[in-house]
Image (tube, rainbow, N blue to C red):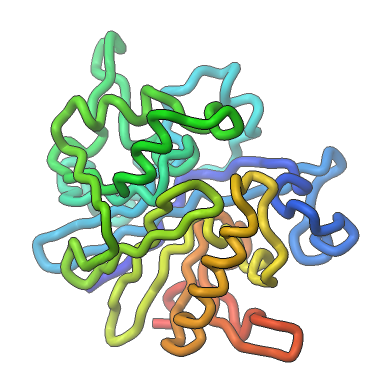
Length: 280
């Protein structure tokens, strides 16, 4: 099995929103922000090549949104989904499985692209099965007022219309060597892949834990719809992660791809952080 980080560019978000009730005097020491309180975040996906299967987890913001929408997020960085896949030697039509952790625009916008004459939409990965959870799909297609702006119908409905959408209702190993587990709190039914690599487990953290800076238990995003549920699910995750020495792979951390954890008198903290390859 081969695993490759796929960078799709960066976006800027308000630091206070990303760290919730944690005061800026604390979070700014570990994750910097600019003079406008904007912190820069990666949109990092993961490519898994295992035998005949090529699996991609999340796919960034995409390129079909208009300038009015995108200007709110200050996109930056040279990498794109297309260029990173090319660098990895994989064509979009070779992707067999497209795993969507949840349907917020910065995680699934690359699922769909304009057709050649921009009269409609088509799958970016035409031969892939698109995986997400039933609970998340129901949540995304009947959104609450708080999350509604993050669920864009052009990112979601064309997948179902294509017939390529596969919804899971329970946790399990739906793809060989990849276990899908479900966590809520940030959004309902977030699908967190646990990938078995060389006898180790790499966990794609998505927005259960967007960066290494979010590892202290109360450091939860203001974007989370039910933060107390996030706390409960994180506690469940930490118990497993410490017991099994999970490698955490971060989607949004601009500075660290991955980390392993340790238990301390002050709670769970980073034991070591760096590039994913150094832990494998």
